[in-house]
Length: 422
Image 1: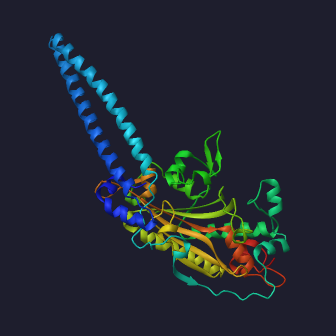
Image 2: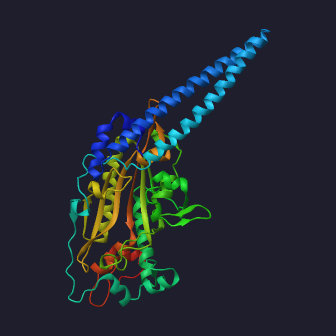
Image 3: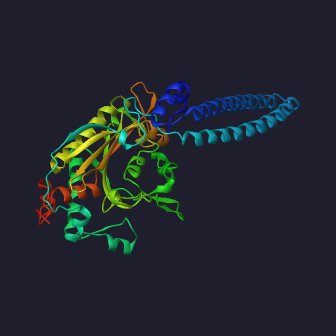
């Protein structure tokens, strides 16, 4: 959530930067400024009323001690009116504050100045590419045919148990999935991230804290009786570990990693581009997260990007990095880099990771702050990234490592799988 003070002091800049997202925010920003002025005026009136009431209450006590009960009783009538006034002002202030917060929750993060303009993913900027695209044999198959051929993932069984988008991994497919999770976690912890095992359900406050609510409410599975939500990503429980925390500068950076299954109701329209493992309702992902001092959060973003690069290099998968344009940028992000692996059998790029800096947007919702060396309280910066999302990495391995009679296992994963081919 954007800070009201920032909006008030940088109104035109906020409007101009939100225009990069193809949003005309003029009216909503003007409304925020107006509501904030009204809220502050009510707060001032309430403060003055309460202060006057306190002053008179002290005077009443003094008058009673001095034997001037008649004068004290006159003032008591005034304090009764002041209490009534303060109650009215307090109610008006709460109503105005709720209206202001309701508006603020609707405003996305302002993009970083280097975010390119654009409407769709076609307008994203490629900033890096690495790895040779393998030349496959003449009868090469897409991964949805490979998993049937080698009987390693069963979509029909998942559909029987739950429904479409819930695959069952089996045999060497399950072991390869487990190997990837362990490998990703080992790489992350070796890079200084502390591993956590996190809850797979979160409360409403956690959803609001990281920005999934109210923006993505329809995309989350909701356990209505307990008002809990299945997590769409480990980012939600991991970041909310620090909700309402007041840190010192020495506490940062904080680096966290964790594996969780992820659950998303909106898996998109079904078709060739989302067949097989390309898009699922339930999938596994290993996440990395940072809590950083504002002065070095963009250095941290670079470090996270470089870290994901090392993993893809070791897997020897051809990949590219895109800087997302304003129209493709997530609601909470100020700057996002997407990693895409090339699926040779599908002849297309598949997104496998997003690495983002949210600046103070999440921290403001979370009330995640730190005291600087001068003793002043500031909001932290939060960042997160996939390291990595498994389904499309697995699809890339199956397709790019296929031979005519087997699927080779990337060398770096063999110690984890215990086998070198399927």
